[in-house]
Length: 265
Image (cartoon, rainbow, N blue to C red; front, side, top):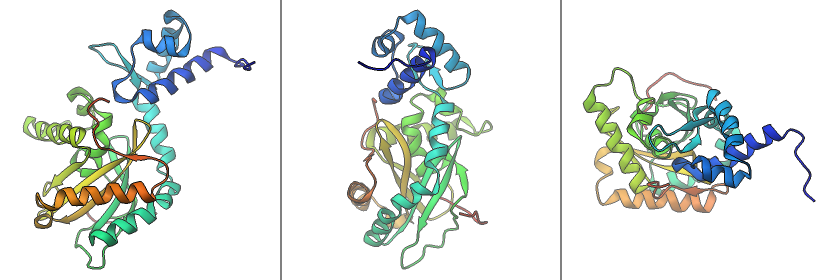
């Protein structure tokens, strides 16, 4: 016999969060979520209202589906951004850098920014300033776009990650880049942050959630249409072989001390 939870209301809320985490960006309707949690819709709605108030749950203004909110995602990011994540993935980053001969970074999303957790230089260093611990606006980087592909499924949700002063053209370009990443499973940034530098990034998934991303940074002329698929394939293969239990993003349609310098990944 299964032991009853000592506080049923909290247990219902936790079960709802667990189901929403598994559902990913699409979320779940109240009816489906109530069925999975095993409670009446009215009962669950009260719990969801409290979770929405604290930002643990968000609701689609059009369809009404519920999904994890920014507070829940930030909690996970805060935990996963510890050195343990960088340590676990460091061998994979080293292998990618050695095989491709390029600069490789690991980053995670914290709020509206990407935090760089690790960096592996190639034998022939690329003159790009970056630093472990440095933050960059997520929407301007390949790392951030790879992560946002699963976090910002609509233009409205992406707007919260953009500079309020960004012009409509810049917003449109960012949306197009994130939408492309959602379709292809990898994100790009080409000379948007630094002349002559291009980046491609692949998100690392746990369940349906992107918890980190790995980017390869190269001189723009070395990331042409022929080499791009090979770089992406190498990143996915090495992460599949050496990363902790997780999976690399392919299609997301439906579902240290800081240092001064410039980071453009």
